[in-house]
Length: 222
Length: 223
Image 1: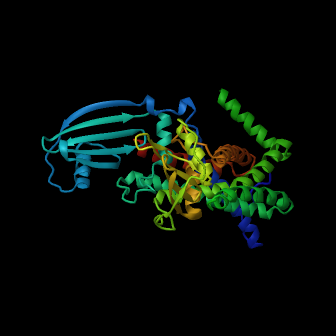
Image 2: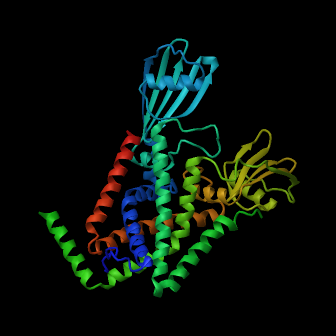
Image 3: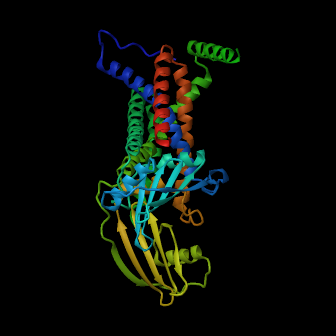
């Protein structure tokens, strides 16, 4: 109920000013990140419960197949051809797969963005492309937004190639850093609450012990 | 008219609560504090693993070469058709604890292969069921990998066998609890902000700025 006092003009103490601004930072950051936190929290819950019927978006996907004539491309190399191809076909997204199938003269290109997957099977000899566009529902979009980084831990060759994937990855990093700042400011504000230090310490230590058991305690092989 | 009436009621309630804090305010403030402190290590772990995942690599570098070991099963396996049950029996005999992941069984060659994963360690198990010979390939990747493993667990994949290790199940409950408590922290945070005199306008501006950023970036990415 205590209103935020304005930072004192005469700066009575640095500690007081620091507390006021830490409190502001905690509130402002929390409010700024609210929708991002809701998105990642709820999508994390959905990802962890594939047994919930409504989270199964893939069987409910919709597919549209079309064919297009493609122009001969002057570029060389599968990745370069794939990039030129998706520009020509007006497809936007992250290229997640480029595969040459020499037996059929096909170049397979898969392009993903949250909610939509394009799979292009381009016949570079006959200048013809089959495009399969798969769309998923809102649950599917939320699911992909949670994981849409454009890189993979187990495949170093996978690099981000779409500007909006980079922007989304920066947003994810921003939310993560914001959460770390919320934790740090929360810890400082708790520390300044003298009479709640012991109870707070118990809560913090119990959380730390449980979390550390999993991060460090289970790492050693039996 | 209805929404104006609702807003008026909220303003009147907030104003009264500011003058004289009631038990709801005090309870909310204390729960916000203690729950926030309890889940802060989990939030730190999830936040750090996000930064690792968006980079696609660990600070510890690429995975090390596996430590290879061969052994013979100490006792014969029961005849089991169920792949998970068979893999579980092997896991028990070789004494490696962890979550059994994708199981590949080749009936013609009479072999079964599966990884056993745990935070920071992955062991690929290859068993010749005819001879009882086991080949283990273990990679230890440490705490960074542990954080990433925990971030992804239990996850949406391999539903048929997921949770076959007790600690994966417990972690699943903890991950759910972290989400629930985080949602509580956001809701209680909004309530506590509404109770703060003189911060409504600036807070609303931050909320609006965050909402606009969110909508803009999501609309751009989703298209």
